[in-house]
Length: 119
Image 1 (tube, rainbow, N blue to C red):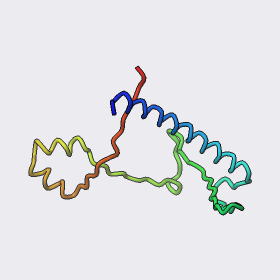
Image 2 (cartoon, one colour):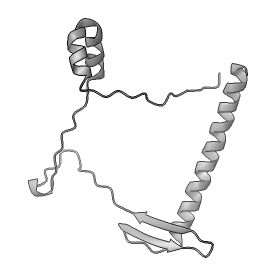
Image 3 (cartoon, one colour):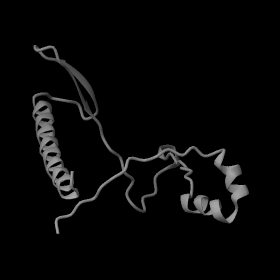
Image 4 (cartoon, one colour):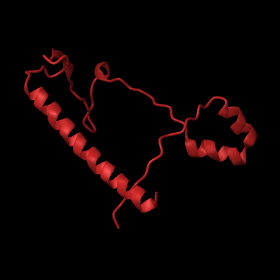
């Protein structure tokens, strides 16, 4: 199959996916509108056609920039991430160190992606 056909198929598939997503969101909103739900929590609903729905609601919290909150309501976390550029540069600049460190780093392939634009 030609690249033109494959790219065209991708455009059509993404359009169908967007339409399906919009339909899903509309159905979810219509279901949620049928029930009076708490601000945060879950409710299970069984339908007459053998389906079980779990309706969940929750609140998101974000501290305003510059706000000073008491320590009792603050949770500080430290997220350690690998500096991938520095790690990969060791492959050439210091192969021995890279070999030592690579025993402590698990690498897995990520999902490939294709970006498409209409010219």
